[in-house]
Length: 241
Image 1 (tube, rainbow, N blue to C red):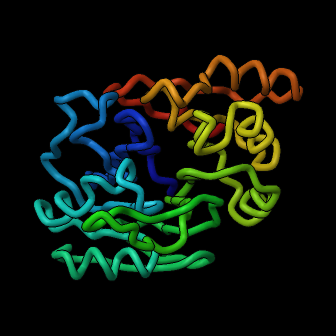
Image 2: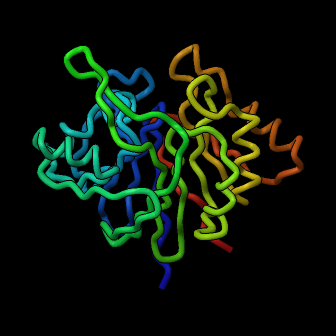
């Protein structure tokens, strides 16, 4: 029997909370303290079971280690980054790499390509953080694609062919990631029914806006629905069919 859809709560920038109907809580790319878009009331968790990190930039993994320690949550990312975080005290890690799949919280976690850099500063020097990635997360009867930070690449069509996620979380801010025009083309490659814009509005440099994405989708003749979330307010996709 298909599982009920999870509830998604955007916490600003690229941080996403996912609450499963079975009670588990997941956070993707946790940047809470210091994130100007994250409501203060959502910077702590009563329960946290799983942390997914797409890449090593501080605005994506800034609170991953602290949350992993506090909640003893399983932390999944690329092998290089999880090895580093384990050495820093993350109690439970499970590294993987592009093309791989593992199970956690009753879900299939698939690591897919992203075109982006990945690293962080330590003692004033840049440290390699492994390859940047995205995730396709699959439950029974539902799935979503979280792109992380990425440029547009035509192999997004392979993500559609392999996994067919009906929902995508795509960056639209420009400068560091896709802009709205490229994100609209990504929707065409992916064939998704709905897209949630992320990585926008946090700083003036991130110029892309959801209204721009809507306009670009119309220009391509696509019926993809743009779901613009407000930080801190949960959203549950409508049931399939």
